[in-house]
Length: 114
Image 1 (cartoon, rainbow, N blue to C red):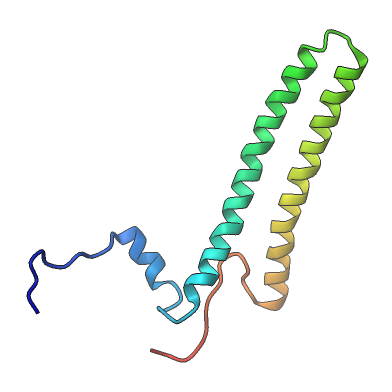
Image 2: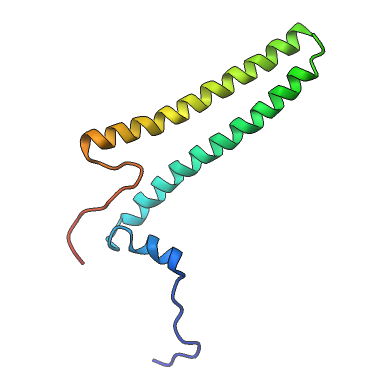
């Protein structure tokens, strides 16, 4: 076979993820879902910071209006509740992984060898 441009190897950072799961069929999907859940947690944290800033601005600009002050406090409370739910999901996944031996956040795929 004629190679005009040579071979292209992926960078080391990508190679680490390719080798994760020993290149077994289906391992990419599980790693993708795990990374998707981690990404959702990060997005939730960023959203929390944005909501705190907006609620703080709403509280400052309320100028003593009880309805606007109450709306700002409700926004702060809902943001805190949301981050507690996200954090407890990760804690629950870690506890379940510790008890059952199944690492949900960093999965290892077992199966027949290559």
